[in-house]
Amino acid sequence: MTTESHDPAPLLLLQDIADQPVVPGSAVLRMATTSSRAGIFDGAWWPRSRDVRSQLPDLIEALTASLGPIARVGLDASAWDEAPAHLVVGDRKVRIDWSAVDDSTMIITRGHHDHFAFLVVPPQASAAAAHTAMTMAVRNDNRTSAEQILDAAGIAPARPEAPRRPPV
Image (cartoon, rainbow, N blue to C red; front, side, top):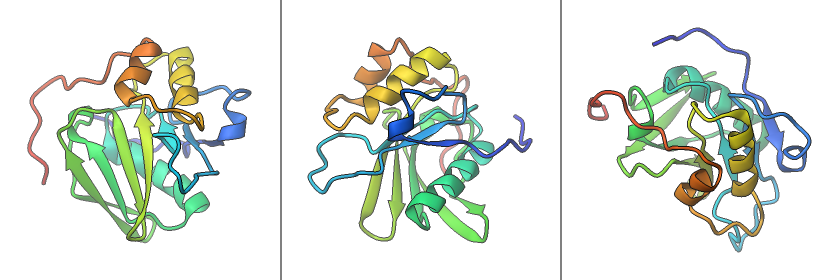
């Protein structure tokens, strides 16, 4: 496992996704989230690896710049190499809630009631497949599950290579 530092992940806004190359570490955030919650996902993220400690801080920093302070992140434990209870990002402690639902999603919580749902594209996806999946996820009329989006884009879900330690 590597913990080397990477350049901050680019945060591509929805209007940019069609014209921008998608690279590992990219995130797409639909800025015009509606109160009707018409689409399933508010964003999508393509981490570079399964190392949550090296991948998540850049995303949290980018989202904080657009959304304000992030309080919690909900992740699928089966998609990551370890499951820390929190990360310190900048001067803030961000709690990480782990589930074992194997659903390729992430929930970002800002404050007590603001929740943003993200599709998480597995790191092994090709750039073309990741772009397809991310574009599908943030469409305003999307009602497709993460599993269906990844399948339509030709992406196999991330699977652990060895048994996981229980969340701490």
